[in-house]
Amino acid sequence: MLTLTDRSKYRILEMIPGMLVWATFILAVTLSFVRPLWAVYFIILFDLYWLWRVSYFVFYTVLSWRLYNREIKRHWFADLERDYPAWRNMYHLIFLPTYREDLSVIEATVKSLTQMAYDPKRFIVILAGEERDAENFAKISSYLADHYRHFFYDLVVTVHPANLPDEIPGKGSNLNWSGHRLKKYVDSAGLPYQNLIVSSFDVDTLAHRQYFACLTYKFLSHPNPTHASYQPAVLYNNNIWDAPAITRVAAFGTTFWLMTELARPERLFTFSSHSMSWQALVDVGFWEKQIVTEDSRIFLQCFLRYDGDYSVTPIYVPVSMDMVMAKSYLKSLVSLYKQQRRWAWGIEHLPYMLWNFSKNPRIPWRKKLYYIWNLSEGMYSWATAPILIFLIGRLPLYVAPMSMQQQALFQNAPFVLEKLLQLSMIGIFVSVLMSLKLLPPRPSSARPHAYLTMIFQWLLLPITFGVFGSLPATEAQTRLMFGRYLGFNVTEKARSEI
Image (cartoon, rainbow, N blue to C red; front, side, top):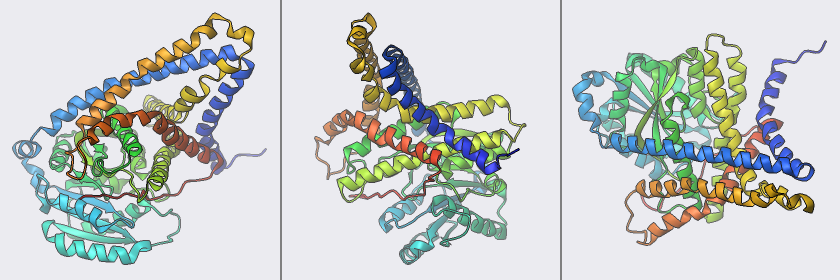
């Protein structure tokens, strides 16, 4: 009898998400021609489901907004001094992986670390460069070490060699290499593991002045800080006044999605820039070096290592990063698509969970089902919702036989679908209001009427939702289904002002 190898079994799991997406599209189109009445019922039910998701979004975004406003006004460093004087024994290991970024972007990040409401002498900054960019990185790291090392406990420079076996070039493999190098540094310096907090930052990350005080407070007040990651709110507003409108809408969508997740920490994964304990990082062998989405995978690595006894603590004190902005509008759109596709590649975690959860009986099955459902449902709706709502949703109304179009359901369906979409508009109104409140001060280079642009840009939401939402998500899941694995691409970003 033939038996499936482990690799073949894993490939079947990788095919599931894409098969569900394409089965949905094919079923919706087929029913539109073969059973148009069934198709109408299906589309109405899907629109009701989407209205529920919008309501969920509004409720938890508003809840997160209230918590965000409360926490950014708190004097975290003063509270840390009062409640946890042991903070003076803590060190922050701040990883800044970089590849071909401009000096201006990296220097802005390093300089911001010297301006925290915290003692920068407790920071060990790791500039993690690539051998593929050796000449450029050597100049940048030398300049930054000369000008900024004295502010910190230390500034460590690592260079990730090119073409190492069993890894893909990218942020994850760079972090894996620099993590192992830093372990030797930590051990030789005799720094206690329990006193070390790691922050893995995108190199354009500008943390709020109170971020490290808040992070340290959350860490020291946690009943089991080793078994937790710490996820800040992520704002893409470093270059918001310069970036194209369509990329702003996409970036705000990511920010609002994460804010709804922060309000539900029991379903939260780490995303982009985040923090965790050094002990946990060492226990799991550092970030994986063969995947694209190492920022989320590190949570699952810890979740499995500690048999489900691992969670994410939300931090509403934000970090700010750059939006996609290339040297031309068209290049910006291409870069935006690639960025969204890379984020959608997080679907690679689903087969990873299905495979590894089945091999660990110590994790409660309710937790397993909860995380599997949250990831699969979110990725599925990301890929299917815009296409079903805006493209396929009206198809059965157009192709149904004339005799069937005279039925009451067909006569009323357009009005029902329109009403459901109108009710869903509340999500746009909430997004507009919150986006205006999250705007940084308008620079002198931006005209006063730019505020109006920030409002009317939301008319682009259907385009952003479909072209830069559904399409890259569908492509990512289709690639995984056919085994056409995605490599890591660096998003092109620029700033008119620093």
